[in-house]
Amino acid sequence: MAKIQDIRDNIDRIDDRLLKLIYQRGKLAIKIGQEKSKNNSSGHFHVPHREHSIIERVTGRNNGPFPDESLTCVFREIFSATLALEKPLRIGFLGPETTFSHQAAMKQFGHSSKLIASPNIESIFRQVEKDECDYGVVPVENSIEGVINLTLDCFVDSPLLICDEIKSTISLYLLSKAKDQKKIKTIYSHPQPLGQCRQWLNLNLPNTLQIPTSSTASAAEMVARKSTCAAIAGILAAETYNLSILAENIQDRVENHTRFLVIGKDAAKKVKQNKTSIMFSIRDEAGSLLKVLQLFARNKINLTKIQSRPLRDRPWEYLFYVDLEGHIQDSAVKNSVGTLKKMCLFLRLLGSYPRKA
Image (cartoon, rainbow, N blue to C red; front, side, top):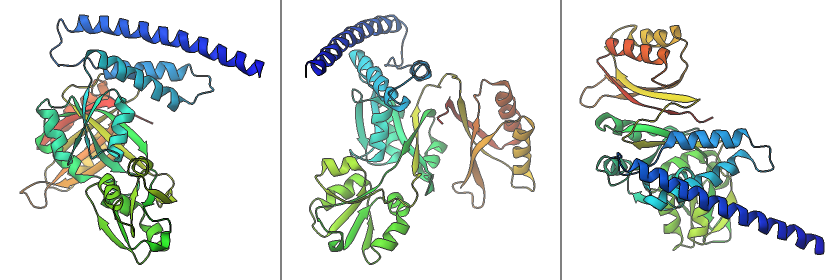
């Protein structure tokens, strides 16, 4: 026991040194904030590319025992607490609390940020446009169910830019007040999780009624008052609404990921690995889309996603949304987008931002 106590005493001494270093870091950050305040008009001192470079440097030097993801979480919380010394960032997300959007916002901006729940994706865009939020976090695609079209549509009328992306692993649980899965007659959840669990539901609960809700959180809140109902939601919802876990990881594919976009008014600066998003419309004529693809191919630019959406009030005409590797400051990307603009009826740069693996 004496040996264990010696180790614990050593840990306490390390904790004391960590506390002093965090205190010193906070004081230096305040000094930087004071310098920035002399000519800063944005209302906050958040520098995303600086945070990104710190995390790259820290994880690049990581020799264990902690995985890179754990170190990233620790430093995200340090960033969040440091910014809160001046003014907490206001982050809009698709609410209510415990949704996967809420979890993505916490993952990116930490618990010291002021997280503001919004009832729908459109209102998140409006809050950021009106400076009621510094950033918004919106879902854009899921690896099983595909693209969230409403998010893409919001960019048509919004001047906001994509500042960053968040990729989250989605684990889905069957939650209920009931203790026996056989008693479940109705299942509530957002349409996306219902679709992501379609095969599991058909196999295990084929005769239950499925009712879509506005969010996984509202589904969990609803079934907390009903004994023969269940919700499909995340583990945080089970803890928040005191629900039993009847089945876990019920998504049809183990690799279930959702990609979120961070939207704001300021363009992100270039880092080591970047992604650029654009939207454009082209003439309705043979070979027009092929010419676009050939343009990027000639410049050796990899397109990671291309999605079409119908133009409002113009039947059978489409907007194209494209994600490509590289930053708009890269000569190949800049020249390609410049050439493409001459070929298009309309083109808008949605943003260049750090690319997540």
